Length: 382
Image 1 (cartoon, rainbow, N blue to C red):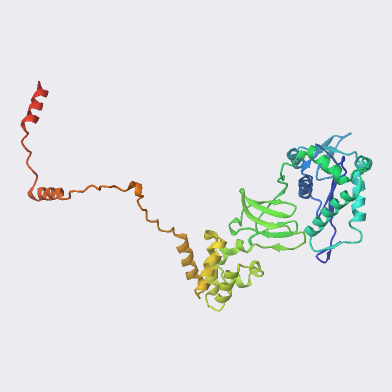
Image 2 (image 1 turned 90 degrees about the vertical axis):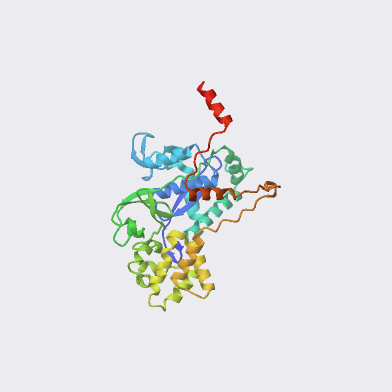
């Protein structure tokens, strides 16, 4: 089939509910384990529930060893997924297609009815949306093979309340250790993905999902990208290289990570205006560096304010950010009417003058105790 004008081969995951015959199909570019995890999640989210027992072919992404009968050694991550959705896996006997005849028939039906003639779509997302619509349309248009008075869709709606409630997405990734090159990139599946510059020289762990790549170092995310399925591609996040620009500001114009960088409108306008300045690249790097502390929205707003005032220099933008960062002055508190005194006390400040006179004239001699005080002291002695 053609995706975006390029001839590609897609792998289609098939899921089917045995009672209602409701089918689900989704296309992927690989047959790897993370695709299996994603197919389960997409199917159970569409069904709004899961079945209690799943019949599986002996696919390598699920089964590591085949023993006699139905005994299998399942993959550890596959069992974690089954535990998450509360599905008991049951493996088919090798070379016994009749044990999963419904799915075998579904594969042929989808290939013949949905993929013939050759499809032409713009993206994989468009293909999967089209496949889901076709599955629903087929279920609504065809009768159930055993309950001929009802359609497959009607049987599916009756079966839905009896499914195990959908438990939410399983964190279905495939983990691979990797190292970071001097150019702040990590190689995975024949492609390179950028990470933050501070991750250089230390090992990382690549978590590969069906549609994205998450790169972690010591538990922290140091890079996240949409997954690429070509070969020899390098996927950059320009923000990963902004700290490096402080040492090499000239790379902002010619560096590979920045060639197709689309900045917000106000920041892009300031960048264009600064190109005529001798230190324009350095000033733009100073503005970009502020994003780490203030956020992209705040820097974009500061650039817009600077342009509204007819200026486009880094010191002005940084000053605007600093002014907005400072807390606003505390509001003046007004005394409520209920707390105002009807008769305010009059303070006699003249009494402090006696203290001033005492300090100038030396310490005041001890006064002679009066008769009442003397009588109390005599009584205490008795």
